[in-house]
Image (cartoon, rainbow, N blue to C red; front, side, top):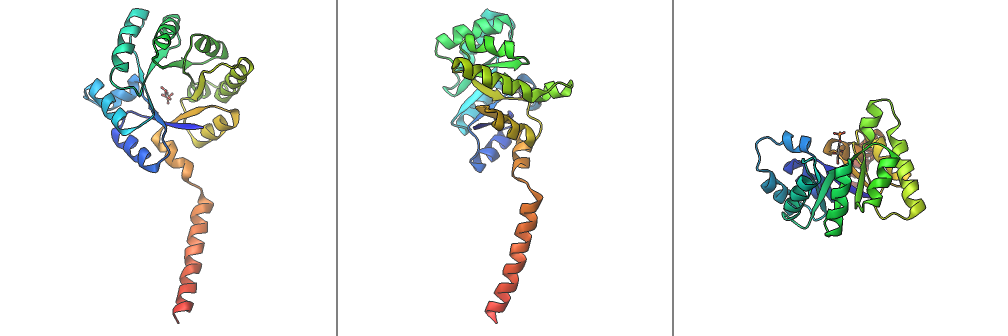
Length: 219
Ligand code: E4P
């Protein structure tokens, strides 16, 4: 399973890279807006210099022509750039065209298996089902991941399932159990993944015992 970091923050991306766990980055307009008054394209270029893998960058145009224009423009920033198109009819048309030009597309804002079938048929490299936002409205977000993985396997679709809108470590584990190819994870959750109270207690005990042993050995 690949791990992408779900952020546009350079410091978080650098720290996650140092952990050696990160295969790529996903951004969206809200994450970019959090970074304040940056130069958008320069900022994306900086992200691409830090990470070696795919960096998803979302179009904001709503019509095919606008999406194609932005998609080609963003893709020219770096070979790492993957264009995020929304799951609309225009987004699917743009996905088909950009994919046929060799530009990878991540189809975003997916909330149903039917939508995911369309993204695969349009030639998307990634489909981004949003788990947390479905949970937020009392739906079972994880069921969407399970359903899409099954459908894609049934037809040998090459589109990769990128579990998005991840809010906590269980989302990561359950996405892995369901067979998602990628999880895009906020930095806070990446750090939560490593924590277990029994690890901390166990380490404390080992060090205490080692301290006793060293004392004896020195005597
Ligand atoms: C990533 O590609 C998505 O845009 C992101 O995971 C959405 O997460 P959110 O629902 O927490 O905003």
